[in-house]
Amino acid sequence: MGILYEATNFNSWAIWLFVLFALMAFNEFGRSTKWGGITLFLIIPIVLTIFVWPTTAAPGNEYGTGNWFNWVKTYSALAGCLGFMAIRYKPSIAKKKWVLCFPALILAINIFEAAIRDFQCFTYGAWNGAYIDNLWVMSGPWNIMNGIAGILNIIIICGWTGIFVSKDKTKDMIWPDMIWIYVLAYDLWNFAYTYNCISDHSIYCGLALLLSCTIPTFFIKKGAWLQHRAQTLALWIMFVMTVPSFADRIAPVATTHNPTAFFIVSLISLIVNVAAAGYQINMIIKKKLNPLKDEIYVDTNAYKQVIKENK
Image 1: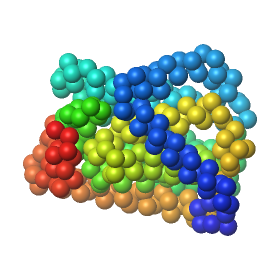
Image 2: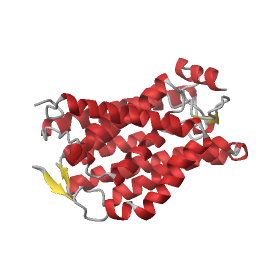
Image 3: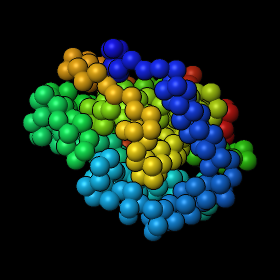
Image 4: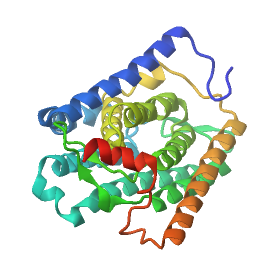
């Protein structure tokens, strides 16, 4: 038995690695050409919405994919992908400053949806763990802690006025103020959310999914974190809606169902997001910035490197 997950075998880790690299590969396909993105995030979802998801993600199905959260998350992630493509491929749209608030808004909405879900799981009162809507959930203070961390993660969204489209042929949506501080705070919060609310699926929708957008952010295309995140999230949830048995039957990896693990994961999330918020507030006060208009991290090496590579 592990700390966070039950002991697993070589085959399970091989499948996990395949999921990770498949998400990264399809993300690259979706961002490398306009038609790749249109195919993945418009044409395929329309076909699946009409012919597949009404069956595989029907309300009350045995895999828990028929709840409100999965449906809302699917279309909000796809809306993000399509909205970002409009910014990337339509220069007239990208030049309008008010349009640039869309990425921040869609990010905030997605975080808020998950924070609400954490609070909802607390209200279930499943203090010893229970299957609710065919998903295993254990209610506890960790839900409140991580819900608060999610709200803080919304508050520290910054620098959206500095979003621009990269000068290279992939025309990525670059958000230079989203440096490693935010990415770390988001990743820890989101992993805790998946661990709390989609517990026995979290090794995929938490660990693998987060790495699939974080690795490209630091090693493939710096500054495009939100674009990577939206596309890999949309790809994963579309797959889950289509093959709902994957994490429960085909390649299950259960958590240890240990209350201490839940508490520690959410505590780390809360501490890091409190620290990030505190640091950002200090920067705003020290530099006399307007957090709704000004970029905050322009003096950092991470920010400067993104600008140098993309503008």
